Image (cartoon, rainbow, N blue to C red; front, side, top):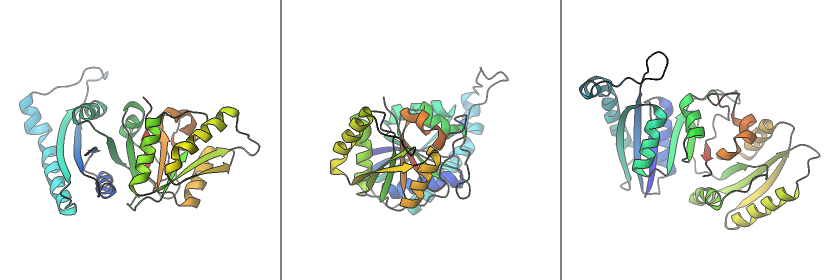
Length: 280
């Protein structure tokens, strides 16, 4: 039984992510935990959180959220008739990341699926602080669903890598398991400069990856470009990639693909979901 956490702010974006999650795991027994966090304000200075009394919390702060969660559950039940899918609503008054961390521990969460706003075409996209924090501060796999994404069984998964890092087996197992769900092909893509030659260490890591994915359909691709972001985008578009996988350990490498100078602003292709995995 998979335990999936679905943060929601009741927007169209979060509904799209919920719908994507339901369809993606349509053949998998799942517990879906739908979490709404009423953000905790602070006094000026930002150090002391405001804790209303339990009575005020229940009757005012969380009342509307619980009403909206009830509506959302009814909407979901009209959409998803799978008897192996179980939905639970959670309303919290807390800091967003603290609330998510608590649910991960209490519910033994396997994956977070979260929607986020996008823009038209390949324009840069600004993702909110919550999504940036999930990627950088939470040690749990996160599947980010742009607002323009629509589910279709993923045939092609892009895994950009520079071959400098040795990936732990549990990381690669997550990728393999993801690919096996829909018999997807794993496309390992390396963006390199024109005359760049792989070092001995890079060649060893490439050989290791080839051996690991022997049971999966996979292939290696070299894109020649001086700009990593352009190279990955070109590959994603030309191969009609369905999901991009990145390793959080490689944030430096991916900074030019997904990040602006601050983690609050993340740019990416607006129709392709990306899965962020973490090394322990």
